[in-house]
Figure 1 (cartoon, rainbow, N blue to C red):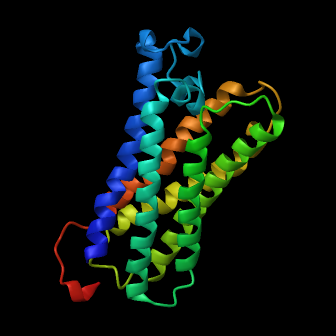
Figure 2: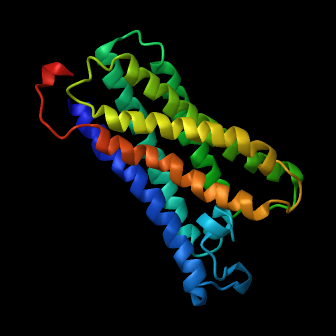
Length: 237
């Protein structure tokens, strides 16, 4: 039961910290231009979730927005690692040999580590194609690992849904399944769009990036609502 309470507590912060930090950076760079010493960094009149007027990296990369974004991502990465290991404890209480446990821990911790790497290199600019490719690969690996971890965790929860009946709201678990399935389908469809060279589909790419980011962190918001608030005997889980 202790692991469940911790997962419930951590999950809401994994949603709130990235959501608040990224959108705070967006508000600052679009509405408080005087804060930015380099006027070329300023973005005007955009709501990128709809119009794709700027990418997330374009929003959080300049000074001073990176002062908000980088610490937020480091904290989120730490919470993600805790989240996946706590879920491991929950599943192992149901079955010590669950085939999905090692997979969601591997992909989940891997996604957190790639997020740390991405945050470290954010704002460091080199006019080098290999460096640019490296940054894109880091973000691609983060997305693949994160969605894979979410999918394997849902599979593990479904495989022991009878034992978790008193602890989980299964309507929310179904929503999480729909969400992750949608993320996978959208990722497959989006590959030709985001890999298209040049500025073709630039605004579509940016809007996809913001909406996909929101979808990924919504998984953790649903986790908060999935676990029931009722108090159970510790021997149950």
